[in-house]
Structures are given as C-alpha cells and as structure tokens.
Image (cartoon, rainbow, N blue to C red):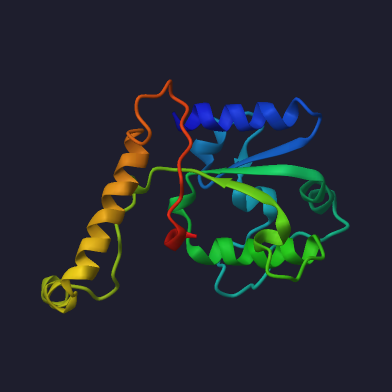
Amino acid sequence: MVAYAYRRAKEAIRSRGDIVLNVASSGIASLLLEGGRTAHSRFGIPLDVHETPICNMSRSSDQGQLVQESKLIIWDEAPMMSKYCFETLDRSLKDIMRDHDDKPFGGKVILFGGDFRQILPIIVGAGMRKNMRLRQNIIPKEALEIDEFLKWILDVGEGRLNEPNDGVADIEILEECL
C-alpha cells in the first residue's frame, strides 16, 4: 500500500512537469525506487551526523539546485535513520531555500515512509530493572495514551483506517503527533 501511495504522489507531481526526488535510508531500498538514491548520497548527509551540523551540499551546486527545484521528496524507510539525519537535513534545506523561519525543511514537502513496526526501540543502558521502574512510574492515563497511539500506528501500518477502502484512504494525523 505504501508503494502505491509513493507512486500516486510521484505521478501526480511529475504529470505537471515538476521534479520528485526519491531517496531511501538504505542502498537496498533505494534500488526499489525509480531514480532512487540513498539519502546520504542525494543530500550529502555526513555519515557521522553528530560532528557536522549541515549536509555537504551548497546552494550553488548541481545537487543544491536540483533540491531547490524539486516539489516533493519521497524518503522511504525513514524510521531506520537517526533523528540527527533529519535535523541536519532540516538545517541544510533552510539554508539552501533561504528560509530560516519556522518552516520545517525550508518549506520543502517531504513524504516520509516506512514501517515503524520493523524498528525496535533502543534505551541505552536499559535492563529489565530499568524497564520495570519505567512501567511502575507511568500513570494510568499515560499508559492509556501510549496504548492508543500504538494501536493507531498499527492500524495505519495494516491499512485498517477508514475501512472499507480501495487501497487509498485519507488518514488524519493526530494533532499531538505533529
């Protein structure tokens, strides 16, 4: 279903003669996208994003001009990436697009995709005791909110929202997720 949504979005934009950039978090996933490249390759995201605050892409480079002209960026397997990659790209696009306002990614439309169920949460230094203390410290209201969010994510992934549908459905993103 996700591949279908990518294709529909890409075709709609390209039918108007506009540019769509397909990127993925891994080389394998990028091979499955038409004209796809890894996000690191397309945007010059450094491999160690902790050290470099921006991408290796300038406004005047061919890469920078292509990004400026694009109308949509489709990023597959986004949950695999560190949040620092997105923050680095955000700063770089704001610089390239000359948009230092509050618009994320310099105002570029980015469609992030991937299956969040494939990514396991990692809590550094967490062991069984720490997890038990975390569970004991959560108040029932928070636990209910977490369960509702997890159910919503699973329903999105399984395509169960707004059923019945023909494979295409409008999904309302919860305000607290934005």
